[in-house]
Each structure stands twice: as C-alpha cells, then as structure tokens.
Length: 128
Length: 378
Image (cartoon, rainbow over all chains, first blue to last red; front, side):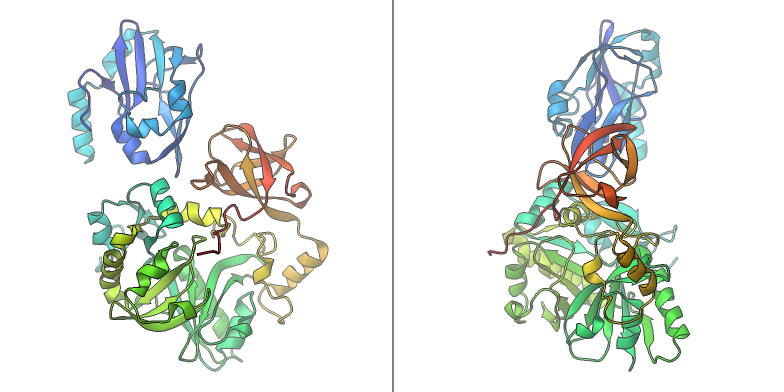
C-alpha cells in the first residue's frame, strides 16, 4: 500500500493529517500489517486530553495488545465509532475509513517533530 | 553455527524455506524460527474448523523409551496408566515432579510393531524432559530402560480439520477408517515411510505424521499438493493457540507449570491414582483427599473489553481470587474467552468473575468447557 503524501508520521507508525488547528490521527499500514487481525481498539473519550509521545490508547490483535502513541498534544474532539465497532477496518483501510481520533492541537510546533512522507518511506525502507 | 541454525543459535526446521516462500511471518519460539501466521490468524483458524490445515511441528520433541522395563519406568514418571496401552495405542499424560507439580504434558505412543514407546514432548521443555527422564532412569537403577532423544532424526507435521481424512486418503493405502483416535500405525504417505497417528491439538479430527527428518519437506509438499483442491492451507502458531484454547487443551507455561498440580489444571482424568506410586503421587493423593485449593475454570467476557490475556488478575467483588492462564478473542464464538486458575471457592459454572485488563475490571461469567466441541457427524 502506498503511503499518502499529505500525512505526517511518528517513528512508531501513527499518522496525522492536519486541517487548520485539527489533526486526524490513525495507524499506518505498516502497523496494521505487523499486528495482523485487529480485534479491539481502546480510544480516549471526546473531551479527553492527549499528550504527544504518551500512549493515547491500545490496539489489540489476536496475538497481542499494543499501545498507540499520541503524535501530538491536544483535546480529543471526535473519535471514530465505526472503527471501534469494527476494528478490522484498521486492517482494511488504515489511511482512510479507519482513522482513530480527531484532536484540536494545543501546540502546532509539535508537527515539526514528525516525519514527512519521504522521511517515513525512508524509515520503512531501512526496516525492510 | 551448524546447518539449520542462525547466528543467534535459533534453529530452523527442514521446512523453514517453504514457510518464507509462503509469506509466513516468522518468529522465534522455544529456540526455533517458526511461522506464527501466513494469511492471518482468524482466517487460518476458520480454515482448520471448516476445511483442513497443515502444521510444521518440527520444533516438538520425540523421546524413545525402550528396554525390558520401559513400562514400569513410564508408570513411575508419568501420571496416566501406561499399562492400558495396546501396541499402536496412545494416551495423554503428564510428567510430574516430587511436589506433584507438572514438568510437562506429553503424549505416550506404544510402538505398533516393536517393543518400546515414543513420548512426544513440548519444544520448550524438550531438553528439560530428556534430562529429567534420564536422571530418573539412572536413579531407578532397578529398572532396565533406555531414554533417547530422537528429535533430530524424526520430523513432525500435522494435518488437522474435517477434510484431513479425505486428503490423506489420496496419499496412503493405510486403513484410515480402522485407525481410531489416539492410535498410531506405520505406513507410507506419498511413498514416504511414516508413523501416522490420529492425534492433534486443535479440537478437530486429524493426524500427526512422523517421517524421517530428511523427508519432511517431501511429505509437506505432497500434502500441500494433495489438499490444494480441498482448501488445505498452512497454519501458524497463532491459530494453533486459538484452536487449542477453544478445545480447552492446556498449554505448558499457561495452564500447566511446576507449581500447578494436574488436579488444579483440571486434568485429573489423565492421572491414574489407582496404578501405584509414581513421582509426585503422594502430594497429589493428599491434595485430592483434602480438596484442591485452586481450580481451572472457563469464562466468557460479558461486557465489551479487550481480550483477556495470561496473567491478567481475576477478582470476585474486587478481591483477587486468581489469574487468567490463557485468553483470546475466539474466532469461532466471536467473543472473548479464557481459562483462569482461581480459588476453588470462586469456581462454578454461572458464577461471575471480574477480569482485570490494563488495571480495569471487566465482567465475565464462568461457562462450561470446552468452549468448542466438533460435531461427530461427518
């Protein structure tokens, strides 16, 4: 799966798409592929605050539970109930329908710490 | 660094290259690089329940026990009544320590056409088991017995699932209908001499097949080709674990350990207390008389949660009563299930439990085991 060009990434394979002061957060294709069949998502509630680099929730596959790390800090303004109800969406459409949460950014400067698509593709290549 | 071994000393089975070519995700397990999944754990699990799956079990251990006193020796080290085995018959048993804890769980096969027995042991315990049995063979110098590790000479693959019988029948002239569960015969499969047993670890009908190790690849290829039209797929360790859990088959290190008794593990049916003394029989008899302090129970989660996993604490009304030994999202049932070792006072079908997942308790109820039983009509 090609990595979309309009995203920014963490080294732990979360992505963000920025629209004004709001960021949509999801799990990258590499993460879902490594995890295998995803069976459960534990995500923060609307109104919760998340802090960059801290765990924001948990993704479970049949084999294991893994933390999802916040790429940015801010307040959760929406979460994807469809993905919570059907976690397999993360396997099927990680960069699209299976976004996880939307966050109102508290510090847009944090975006500079994230990888752009070229840098993220280079990271994937170095893992290959 | 020998053949079939990488620089970390992690070994490869003869089928390693085939798994990589099939796109398997390989992980280190018990000192071996093994396939954890190919297509995906849930898809593989369903394939075994509805069609058939092929497993590389080259990591498992086989031990040959021979000599004029092989039977009294096995009666002394294993829990079940080995004297009941006719030639070609097999039984589940455990090796127990002097305290009545479990060293390993095993299958004992009585050789069909020669004297002696083959004991199949867990990969993770193989070296420990061989040393244990050899130590006891030496200590019991009144018995003439030889304990030999034959794992490096014998391959092992399993074909499991409702279609395994039909697939295997295309490759062998052996009378499969005349081979009941827990029996072994010597035959050829695809022209390869093998020991063929109707045993497994999935809850489905199926076979475990033992060729000479150097013919493992040939046997795998023949089975894959013969099963292609019947939906046969290769199956990794991930689905092997969910399949055995649904069938309530114990896993050493989870349901079994050196500080868990066979009775606590719910495996009293494989302990013959009437056969005479065996290692650990004293404490086990005493525990049975006094009542077991802990029991292994099955449960299902009754509220939305992540999957219960081994070592999750188990509570009743907020008070800890035990821990989860195995748990998973059950692909067959579509819900979270698990086994737990709990204080006997908390055990009982229908009684509630709370399973603590990431520091938060979630409601569960105890249900009858096994979680899944195949229908016998075929």
